[in-house]
Image (spheres, rainbow, N blue to C red):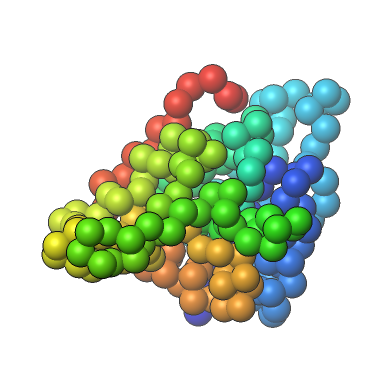
Length: 208
């Protein structure tokens, strides 16, 4: 089953990946509810007008795809968009459900890898795991990582968790996501349908 999606991204560095995601969705791209061209110019449009434009698109969606790019924290809107999608919003006596959220890691175009964000380490018990440079992402993303309840450990010795189901917001490499977007969208949606995560739906204040 296709799900209505919204893509949250920093336009000046992630537009190409946004376009690739829409292409990879194939026929399911008809369920994409986000921007199809450059975001509104903040200098010409009021904050409240832009918020209304964005909320009209996000309200009816069930999965948010967040592009994890090197300078995403310079965006004035991404953490606000995530906050909106994680809340249950009531409009005209109808309350929306919380969106599932998946983070798609952008590949370094020069190096052709993900070393700007990923670190591979080997634990003392021999488990090889991924860690992430999470200073690159907003707190509302970090606060919805490793928040499964109760925690289900992939290894009972080092307490590492499954990279998809151990966190409400999973990180997925762009090439993996583009190869099978439906799988990862469904995974995010399924997590939104149960009560197995401690959700932090409020962002740090400072942006809009």
